[in-house]
Length: 94
Image (cartoon, rainbow, N blue to C red; front, side, top):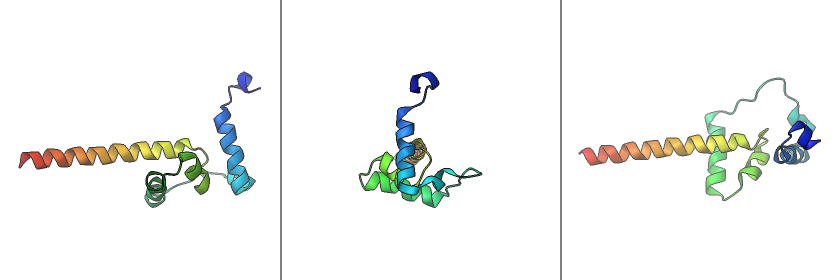
């Protein structure tokens, strides 16, 4: 069945763990969830500073996919690197 419908085993395992932790109600939403910048930053910090896996942090806060946290971390790192590189350029010009 998995090959026939091209279902990602990782995604199915994640959903099963999500349901085990938060119950079936975690899947019942009529609209997209919104995560404000404070929740995102706390979640990113938990991953980066506590040596927890993306999988466990995503499950802990109830993200529908662990890929969401991957994207948040990627954007965060790009922003941090951009700020660092701009600060170096400014310091070198004085």
